Length: 195
Image (cartoon, rainbow, N blue to C red; front, side, top):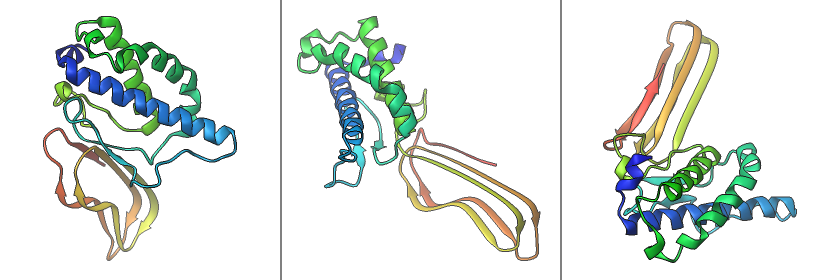
């Protein structure tokens, strides 16, 4: 959290506004689900949100949600939105050294990370924590591998992290296992694991 204190006032304000808006979108979605109207979604976009570059690095894929985490977070999301509301349009009230404010921002960010299953990383945290972006988790359990098995195959990974786990008891004739295959993988701060 110390790295949040090194953000400038404008960047921190943009970060607060973005997190506040994401919390609102999730609460609207939840309310729509409860009222039987379905999820409140942005039909015009592809669900990949470019994070405000002054505050964050990377993108956020809002299509992937952990509904259980959202259900468990509703009360906390409301509480944190209420606490952060005074800072949304009043940049003068945002002080990067305000420990209580930074704790609330970090709490809201962590709730959103749990719901989206992705990191939301501030620019001052780059290199200290995984980059913002999509998470690709693949697990394949198979007894006999007699052909090619690929955990993840993509043309480009521009952000986020990937994990591939492939377990096979026997690799037979013609069997081949590839954990991760890509033409290119994003820039600095990316991470990935294969087993």
